[in-house]
Image (cartoon, rainbow, N blue to C red):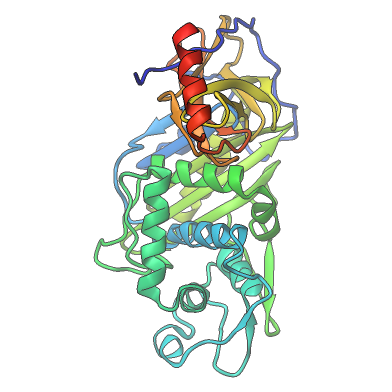
Length: 392
């Protein structure tokens, strides 16, 4: 029978440990019940604590919007997944095709790729992540998947795997496509969280560079808080006349990471002010207490028809509980999964969630991964497991 499994209920006292102080670039708001007024001009806004999965602020998080160049975050994610599986080599060399040159040479934000110079996958990823290169997205799609339609199929397949239910990609770079490409802020937090948890090394290698140079041309990253706000290290800006100004931002301070989405903002100045104010508020107005370090076994899940009767559940990142500054109340935890899990199970597969509830706040959930491979049991093992089940 499928049912949520409660493995532990921990009660931990607050208050929690506050983030370290710093010299502010702008007024820092510390009241968790008063959102900075700079956020007002953003029709869509979402701020989530990555370490707890808890939403600190949301405005229209499930409203679909045109992402413009924020689309490129999914292109980066697909590339990172292919690199992890050994299907894409960052050192591989390619060159802009005639068709790509015809349609995308120097169109919008660009690396100025041409037909005369080779380019590596590594350089393409740098251009996509840091100077929002439209041409690099198309060249990467053709090199890695054979064609742009094939690449789009991969983008949408990965979105479905991640549970991004209100997203669709009709272009690899976010160029205007009459609304075929759309997403929500909640889905973007899901995507950003997946990049940070599944590909932390690639995230830090490619994302958050202030400049990028290719073929003698140096360009600057337009990230509004990168290099200006403590801990800010990405992720992506976007703009078209139809979409307005958008931003997926992330920052880490004292081991605590926040993820932000802003969308459909009318002016880039308003986007920059909202991003800085909201991120600072998230660190200053909320406290955090560490729960589990990355790699810690949090619990276990029962396995059906497996060579082992259970599988350990591991935290892929540093998990914490988050609460409004000065709040008091217990922290309750439980492990939830649809069980028993069915073998075979591959190590590193998301198979369960850790539910975190602080005081009377709404619970949040963060993923737990299988800590070991569990093969499908042979006939004898299945019989033995069945007998164990009768006497347990």
